[in-house]
Every structure is written in C-alpha cells, then in structure tokens.
Amino acid sequence: MTEYVVLLMGDAERWWTELTEEQRREGYAAHGHFSAELERRGHRITGGAELHRASEARSIAPNAATVTEGPWAETAEQVGGLYTVDTDDLDDLMECCKILAATGDAVEVRRCVSDEERAS
Image (tube, rainbow, N blue to C red):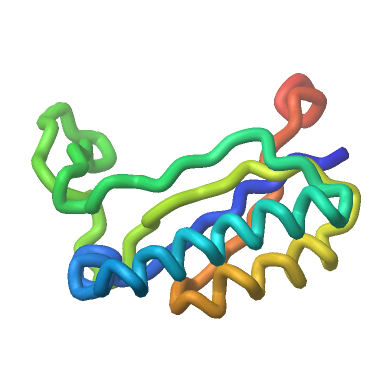
C-alpha cells in the first residue's frame, strides 16, 4: 500500500469560531462519515489530527534562528488538520475526500516519501 497525507485547508481562524454548535457537530459528523467510508472501501487511516489555530503556532523562517509566534506564512488559508491514509486506490481516496471538501475545506492529497525512496 502507498501512504498519503490528506491535508485540510481553510480559513479556520475565522470560520470555525463563527460556527454554531450544531454546525460544528455536523462538521465532526462529516469526518466520522469520511473515516467510516474509508474503512468500508478498504483504505486504512494510520494517523491524523485536528490542529489548533494557526495563531497559536510557533515558526522558524528559512535560514533563521529566531522562533516567532504565529504561522510562518501570512495567508487566509491554513492547514487545519490532516489524515494519513494507506491505500492502493488513489482515485477512490479522492472520491472519499469529496466528503470533506463538502464541509467547505480545501483538500490536498500528497503521496508520502517511502523508506525505500529515502534509502535510494
């Protein structure tokens, strides 16, 4: 199987704080549906996390030695969470990711570098 990371990006700094409790429950339910659908279709979630706000990040700019408060990049969209998924069917994984995209987040899927690739 190949390992992929599913990155969830959006304006979480503003968007999440403006949701009602019901809308938050619906968002979490969509993630539960995504996870169940992956399992049903034979994909395997191997990790992941919901991330705290980017404003809580600490960053080090390239070639710098100073740690700064907040995200490195000043953009409206930030990574708000991720899943790592093992699968042999990228196309089907992308179909499942439409469940997450329907919540309003952008979804980016990238193949992880394998141990074999690293060794060569």
